[in-house]
Length: 115
Length: 111
Image 1 (cartoon, rainbow over the protein chains, first blue to last red):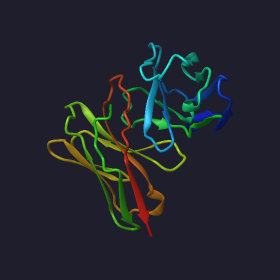
Image 2 (cartoon, rainbow over the protein chains, first blue to last red):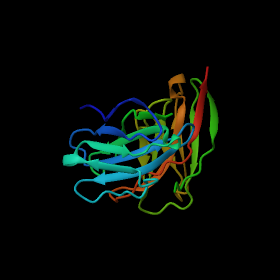
Image 3 (spheres, one colour):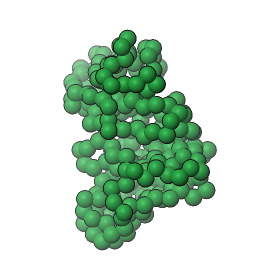
Image 4 (cartoon, rainbow over the protein chains, first blue to last red):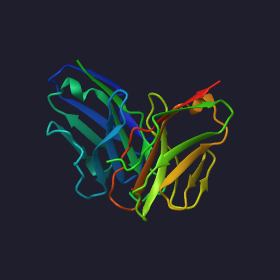
């Protein structure tokens, strides 16, 4: 597609439920990032995929968070047993390579609200 | 952790130049300076980047000091649509590093 697509755009879930957030990067982009942004805060790095390399999971806040990237394209971020503090906008970004001089293209994000 | 320092907010009159400063005193020789902006409710948008020379594109100009310890993003003729949070980031291109977004500068363009 023309840009990074994220779905759903909004998600309201009950505390304790599991949620899956999807990211469709730009076709051919090998680098993919997940960030989250709490209300009024800056972006917090979560996880990074580059090609077939093992992902960098150093930003995941707890073991309730996991992500996978199938076939080097679509990525899914899963949050198990959601808590209210998980409420945030989850942003995905992709790049042609990690060496892409023009930085990353971000999607519009998924706004997650845990009630 | 973010390696940059930016003022939390700035005001600019519509039509005037907006000059947004950024300090990156610990920048390494192989780290580039990137600028992104985030308009309310949207994902961050790439603006410009540079290593040591000044850069200009259709959106903005980037002025990097000779010692590379600070830089200024210049929006030559700010419009109301330029109201956003502007992030200054340093990173090594071609390395498996993450973009670390600091708190940014909220630019308020006023009519």
